[in-house]
Amino acid sequence: MATEQSLILDFTIVLGAAVVGGYLANRLRQPVLLGYLASGLIVGPFGFKLLSVSDLPQIKSLAEIGVAFLLFALGVEFSLAELKRVKNIALQGSLLQIGLTTALVAFVTIILGWASGLSQGIFLGVVLSLSSTAVVLKTLTERGEINTLHGQIMLAILIAQDLALGVILAILPALQQPKNIALALGIAIFKILVFVAVAIALSKWIVPSLISSFAATESNELFLLAVIALCLGVALTTASLGLSIAMGAFVAGLMISEIDYADQTLAKVLPLRDTFASLFFASIGMLIDPVLLIQNLGLIIGLVMLVMLGKAAIVLPIVLRFGYSLKTAVIVSFGINQIGEFSFVLALEGWRLELISQQTYLLLLATTAITLVLTPMWLDSAPRLADNFNHIPWLTKFLRRFSAPKTIFMPERISNHVVIAGYGRVGQVIVKILQSQGYSVLVIENSEAAVQRLRFHQIPYIFGDADSESVLEKAHLPTAKALAIALPDPASTRLLLKRALSIAPQLDVIVRSHIDSEIDFLTQMGAKEVVQPEFEAALELGNHLLKTLGAEESHIRSVINAIRTDKYMSIRPERE
Image (cartoon, rainbow, N blue to C red; front, side):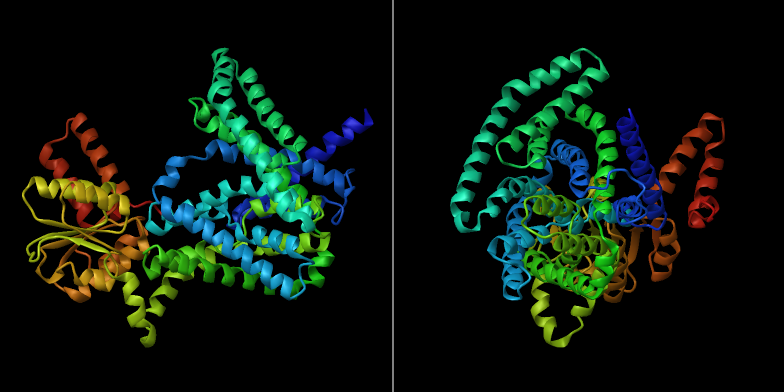
C-alpha cells in the first residue's frame, strides 16, 4: 500500500509541477515544454528531491509511456496530403538536409574528438538534424504566416522529418555494432521491411474492421481502451524485434491515420498524449544535472551558435536549389535551424543504448532547449537579413536571379489592368469579381499549386515573390489602374506596398490588413484603402441585424460608411 501511495504521490508532484512550469513558460511566451523541463529539474534528484523515484533507470522508464503516446498521436495526425502541396522540397529537400547535417556533424565531431567513433558521430548528426514542429508551428501561427510560402515549406520539411523519425528509431540499435555496422543496418532494414509489410496488411484488412467494431458499441471507454491496446501492443511488438517502442507507437498511429475513425481516435488520444507528454518532458528534466551544465556553460553556448548557424547554412542553399527566392530561403533556414523536441526522444534512446554518455546527453538537452527559446528571435530577424543581403553590391547581381520571376503568362503589352498580389481565398474572390465586370487582371503568386490554377483558367500571372523589385518591374505598375494586396504575410505586405509606390507613386493600392494595429500604419505608408477582414465580417453581420430590426436602408448605409471612413476606429477593441 505504501508503494502504491508513493507512486500516486510521485505522479501528483510531477504533474502538478508540470502545470506550474508550463503556465509560467506560457506567460513568458516560451514553449511550454521548457516549463515541463524546468519543473522536472526542480522536483527531481538534482533539485529538491521531492520524489521517491530517485534511480535514473526508473525515471527513464517513467518516460516510455509518454514517448509512446507522443509518437502514436504524431502517426495519427500524419497526412500524405499535406506533403503533396510542396512534395519536392518536402521529400528531396528534407532528405538532403538530414543527410548533409548528419554527414557534416559526424565529420566534425570525429575530427575534433567529440565522438568516440563513426557510430556516435552519425548518431549525434541525426539528433541535430531534426527541427521542432511544435515550436515552429506555434511561432508561425502567432505571426499569421501558416499559409505563406515560407510557412508551407517549413511545415512540409518538418512533416517529412517527423516521418523520417520512425525510420531513424528503427535503425538506431544497429549503431551499437560499429564493427559490423553494414550487416547490422541490413538486418535492421530487413526487420523494418517485414514489420512494415505486416503493419500495412493489418491496417488494410484487420485494423479498420476492428476499430469499427469498437466504435459501433458507442462506448467511449471501449473505444479508448482499444486504441491504447493497439498503440502499446504494436510498440511492445517492435521492442521484442529489437526495434524501438517509439517507432512501434508511430507505426500504430499510421495504421489508423487513413481510416474513417482517425479524427475520433485523435480526439480521444490527444488528452492522453498531452498528459503523458508533459510527464515525458518533466522526466527528461529530472535527468538534468545543473552543476554539469554550469560547468560547461561556455561549451553549450558555443554549440548553440554552431548548430543554429550551421543548420541555417545547410538549409539555405537547399531551398535556393529548388528555385525559391533568397528571401524565402533565408526565412526557412532561420525558421528550422533549431533542434526539435523529438531529438529528446532520440537522445534518450541513444543514452539507453549507450551510444552516448550521460554528460553528452545532458549537453544535448541544454543545447536543444536554448535553440527552442531562440527560434522566434531568429525568425524575426530573417526578413531584415534577406533585405540587407540585397544591398551588398557584389552580391546584388548574383542574388537577383533568386528573386526574378520564374514564369510569366500575360500579353506582351498590358495596361489599364488591376494587379492582384496573392491568389489565396481572398485573391481568388477579387479576381472573379473583376473578371465578371470585364476588367483586365494580372496576378502575382509564388505558390506552384496556385499558379497551376491560374494557368488552367487562363488568367494572366507572374510566378514569383510579389515584394521582389524584379517581379514588380514586370507587372507594368505605372500603367495599371490599381493594386490589390491580399498576401498572408504582414512583412511582405508592407514591403510590397513600399516598393510598389516607389515605382508608381500615384497608384491606387488596396491592402488587406491582418490585425487592427496595422491599419493606421499601412494607411500612413500610402495605401488608398485598408480592409480588415474581421471588421468587414462584423459590418455585414451588423448590416443584416439592423435590417432585421427594421432600420432604414439609407440609415444602415450611413452607419457602415461612417465606420469605414474613420478606418474602423469606432469599433476597434480597447487596448488593455
